[in-house]
Length: 84
Image (cartoon, rainbow, N blue to C red; front, side, top):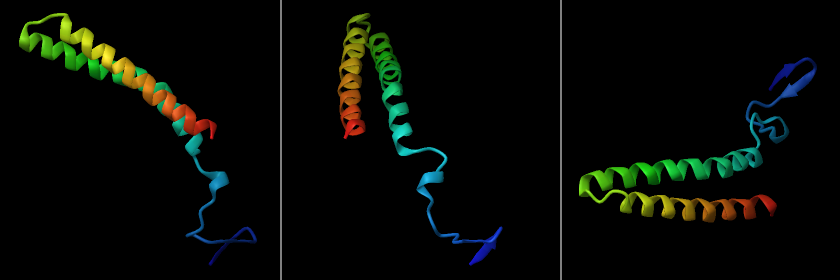
């Protein structure tokens, strides 16, 4: 084992308290990125389907609604994991 300033350093040891990003912070970022990500994906999908099928704005509106519902569902699911 290598020594650094009088301390032994195990290169295979994992130091949870010194990690760059904690898993809790990553989950918080995931919660806040769900709505914009889902809305963009739903918007693009609906827009291109509407242009292809010439049904503007029906599929676009449906895709945005579905995206919002899915984003809220996943936000609640991740929030529940954060609280526990």
